[in-house]
Length: 297
Image (tube, rainbow, N blue to C red; front, side, top):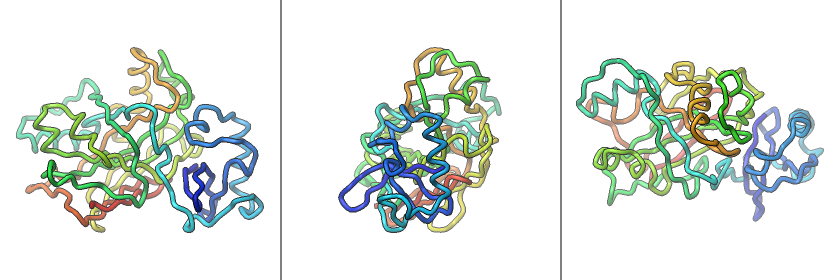
């Protein structure tokens, strides 16, 4: 089941995409009176999810407010996250190798510990939205297609075999990065957190829609050219490890968004590097979830 935050006319709400992918209808038309995606994530019951799943397979015009998907404006699934997004760095081995080459450092092929950082998001950019080039500050604008997941309930001291029960769903994140800013400061927070650097969407695929752990093809395209092509089964540190490790030292609140890292094929991985410029179209694609398409402005 795919859930979206969308705008129809002047109204913004949360909805369910029909099984055929052609329609969207408000969650409230089925019963639950949720106004935002964060309310859905934190409060929805199993019976309500089953009801929405059933409704998604019915004739959509049976529900008040149903509209064709192409006639509404999709927003980021969680337009304003309550906390910074937690991200993993160099969590695919081939990306670790290309990252070391870019920084002109030797790579020993070992990743004994996960690298975590946070990404400030005042407002997530929607599918179809613009990525600001920040040309006055950035000379090496890069893209990173990533699988992100959302925590469904407060997680503390969660064992790896329990993690599945804490996942609400999955979405796509483009972890846009200013490489010169990132490297100049010798940490990643500023270079990853400029305004507009968190495209997210187009939907949340609920966790029960795919097998766990989710082994999904992940790709990115720049102006139609395939740049990244991998699978989430190649994650060095998987979702079980991530949630278990982090929850051992902190409480991951319901609604927390965690992005799992990107595979090789980013702009800095080419020789010479192939960074983004105004006018470029970036498409991040993950099987079962969909495509996240943005233009550099």
